[in-house]
Amino acid sequence: MIKDEGGSAFPQHPIYSLQEEDGIYDLLVDEQGSGMTLRDYFAAKAMQGLVAASVNDGGCVKCDDKFIAPLAYQIADEMIEAREL
Image (cartoon, rainbow, N blue to C red; front, side, top):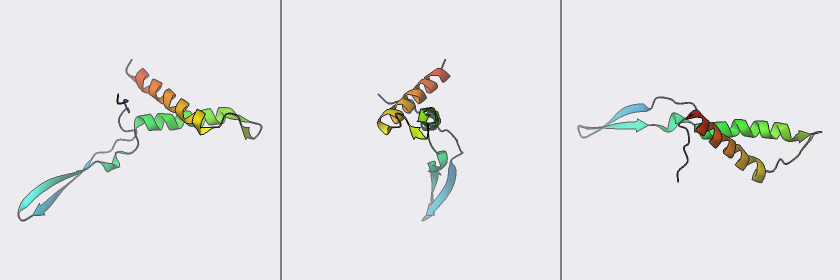
């Protein structure tokens, strides 16, 4: 099953250009500028909050990437699902 990535977090228009070779033109489309997915953006924001909430007296409680990262993506998935309601 492919997860809904939510599209681009910061969408940009693709860049179109023409390439000519021997009188034949090809339309080139560059969509590399589309940036991170909305799912990645939501997960990054959720991770910031989780880490900030975990800080305790200058140390980090449960600041383990095996705990924080999966939870951040779980929150991101829930946020994407909530957008469809």
